[in-house]
Image (cartoon, rainbow, N blue to C red; front, side, top):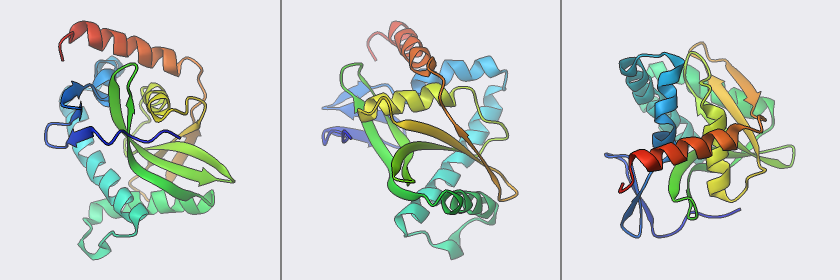
Length: 194
């Protein structure tokens, strides 16, 4: 598997990736216009994204074995429980968490949620803490897979729920990469000097 370039930097405050000082669009920025096609109001998407960031951080710190559970916001506990239950149910071992990746040829970057070894096979697993699994998760994970240098890696989404359960779904639509590339082309057309 390809590793992120050492000259790839990320500024969390502005959600900006740079390669050698040159700004690179992120996978989520590229797909952002498609979110609006689901008919979810922008303010709801933004609130959900803020909460989702906290869920991802809790899962990441747990994956790293450094989570201070006593300091964890109680609202996050069921989501973390769902993540841990998923890993237990599939006998999964996290081998990569919050992995930064870059596609130098197509000039985009991103941070995938996790790489999980399940029954001897590495899968790219995206975590969602949303009421419904967004349609963009397929193109999103396809973008990450290509930036990782593993376009054929198995992809999966795990939807964590507020009752501590989860839903896991494999992402196998062959059109996912084409949708991502189409969104990238539109992004590049709209932001030619970004």
